[in-house]
Length: 540
Image (cartoon, rainbow, N blue to C red; front, side, top):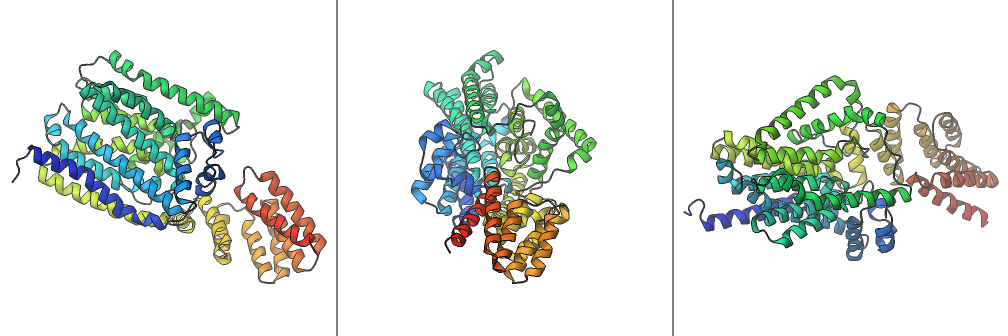
């Protein structure tokens, strides 16, 4: 039997730390090769700018009309060149990026734990790193960023942050300048992948302080200064380009920031809860209860701040790994706290970088209090459960109907998902199911008139024009988009043989859809349909 700590034992642990997460990820995420595009994939990942690889637009504008992330954009260009419009290829690239990131995280984690001043932690660095990497890779919160093509930005930010942490650790140990230069370059790549990488410079400073414990805090600050400068340049560049193209909101006032404080205090509790109890995960979380329970969440925010603060202060002098992970977790939460607007306010993919520090924090805090065999057994069960939950979560992202149906089943108040579900079903020809989904939406938003409107449209398709007119009249008295009303009115006129009335209604539908074209994706669909019918009617 090989002795503990021998070279061959060390090699075995290294291989396990690389291979076990790889195999687990492949096993859990293999089904994504058959997944379709969902949610924002169409407008944000399959836009013509990526299909044509318009480099000018990618480097000088928010290419998808939403955000300036040229590193993410270039990977989508490569995807289109390799896979065309096959979503499975894009999904497999997401999985490959996640595998690379977890591999780097495993190597980096083992080295960081081995440098701990706590001999018990340092002595168990290899098995602890394996547990941490597997738990991180298998956590169900990872399913959204891996299975959602448009979350490529989150995966790339994670990958390049992992590269930065690895490079800083190598520079601290070897002193070789090229590792330091690499950490600056990868920081820039992370920043131009997703804004959640903004705290990278602070995490770099914390990591250097952990690895070079004799360094003064002034030296630590100087070490991270180039990373901070790169961050400042990235923020200015993003702000300038985004504002020049009209996709940046107005500056927040102090009053608006103060108004956001309750939610900002709630967000860390939300991610902690989902980390501990990863059930009922959804693509559409409803946070209406935050203000109603502001006192309870306020107390929770104080408890959270106190616990994290205690861990940081307790380990600040000796620079413990627990203090590092706690402080890095706190820094990683800043961009996703919703103090500055994020849309949606919370999402599983936002938790990915905070999870990189929360998982090891939990393991490092628990490990000293459990015998090695008991810890190994508990860790095995924990990771297996996480893997099973993730495997069950992956099929939810298979197509839009399954995604939106799941979100609506988790919380009936998820009206955006109900809205998306109803349209998805309607466009697939499932008119009865769509009307039921619009009815569920109307139960949450009673003044919305689309339940009656789509009932009217269905009645037209069934040849019941009298019922269609009654239902359309009811819908028009409520809140409903005019181009939808005009489309139904036009089809009723067509069915009655009133060609001129149909043309007038289609022209009104076209005009309203053109007005809404930029902010309403469905307006583009009905604009196209109205123009098609107008050409057909005018050709006779």
